[in-house]
Length: 321
Image (tube, rainbow, N blue to C red; front, side, top):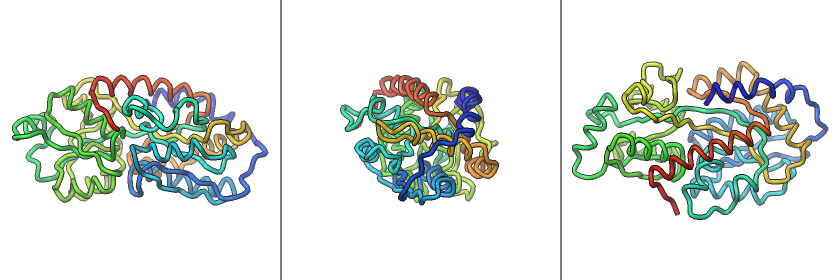
């Protein structure tokens, strides 16, 4: 995904950076985050808000609005005034997964948002409590099959990358897993560290501190290549689970009808941030790949991802209300 996105972005970044549109925010900007503090989306949102504050000359405030797999935040932004002062840092769930997962949505991902910029991507990690007697994916599958009842796995909520990664893993391996949704990564991780739930799927930046501290064990990561943050951890393909190439991503969108000068200014500033060494180093330490796509390319990318993730939802049989 990163190679595809970067290749598409090569022709876009200089143009976005060169633009000098006239729009300037005249009061603080709200960057709505569709999950509680401390999760993977938050780890992208807060440093981005800080850098946009410096670039725009107005405070950009990360506003966590968790619930319903990100749909509450999506609805809030979809109904906001299209003036550039309310934006959504969406994960793949809100823009590409939920329309296939939920019976109805309070917004249309295609119609009700203005694409601004793709920001970052990261693989999903399969982590387990250290008390789990499995050090490989094959051992984990065998251990799960030996349990008397389906093994719960935690995620940040219905429709999140962790949820769909877990469902795809279940369908590919035959492991008897049962989804245990939480209201965000932070509370889910607390329960996995405590041993109440023994396994979790989540974008790698969220469990990384617990992995490094030895409180969780990473068995594998999704995606085509290993995570630079966890170079000793195999990909799921290397671990014998072919066809599991799901990667989480994050993008900035605004309400439908966002004026072109607003989109140009925001995309230009995010493009400059994407080029900066400190941004790339900050995200890289967390196992996140900085990625930039401008508005037009993001619109195409979102449609393609919605088709891909929608197929995964249908294949898994996952549903949410």
